[in-house]
Image (cartoon, rainbow, N blue to C red; front, side, top):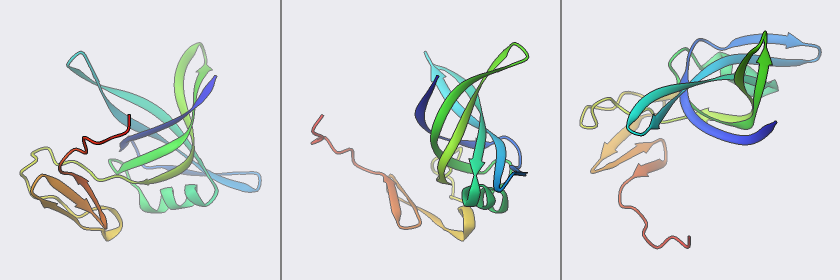
Length: 138
């Protein structure tokens, strides 16, 4: 069983490059924060990234890097254990949230600065947060 999936999380270790036939790929693990009935947890998902996306991931990311992934999520079984794996088709850097919302924001990935202004957070040219749009069509 598989389904399209996207998430934001942090890499659990440095991604590892592999050569399989003609196509390069990389593997890694993603820690995604979960919240269930007020309890915090972590969902660990194995990642497999192909081609140029894999090369960029290995070159630009390290353990703890916050990334957004989009791909096909599968439930796999190995030695009678089940685990989740995402075959990533796209990934990008995700803005990292400071532990204290009023703390200064550190430099983002690949030299892109993050700036915080009045309830919003800017990452590169994109601004997050601010007033909620209450005129949504759904």
